[in-house]
Length: 242
Image (cartoon, one colour):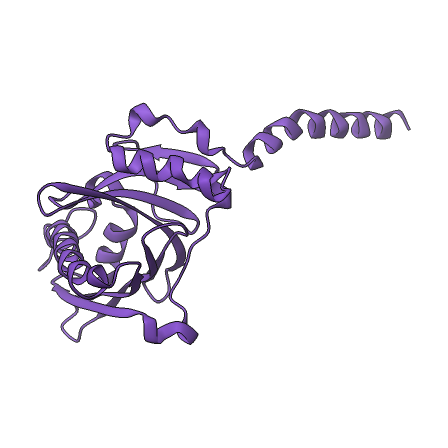
């Protein structure tokens, strides 16, 4: 009897000890809790703080606005593919584990902030990164026309390790709606074809038909070049030809 009571007491102490940690872990993170001093780009800071105008109080309140088939006539399509002379598993590993500070560090697009809905935590520029996961919201700064900066945010809405596909959707209250997909497939030669498919709709008709596809094409080209160089050089895996 005494032994039974002791076991129950230990269990109660364990539950109460862990409960505050669990509560803190699951508590939604406020928009105001961002350390704006660690975000280099004014437009990104403005995009985050402006969410409060739309009733968004925590990062968990931010919702993705994906491509919708019933509304497909209002969406534009962008598609680009690249051959990478490396095994698909090496390319996939590089793709999902490359830090966004490195992955998005080109002349046009640079990384601003990442928030994980699953972990309720931030990742600032140059912090250690474990890999892409569903529920991550990424904020970027786009430098266009050499003078103008635009902030963009997307959420990882699907990560399929079996089919080697990643899906991002633009978040609500932004200037663009739609879905970006990265898809990998093996070639008969044992290499990898990576394809980027975007279905998008902008608020501006001019941006829809001319500006978006032009700059998006350059951004994707920068991204493909980075992942191709890393994969074919053997970083994070086996070098091509070995």
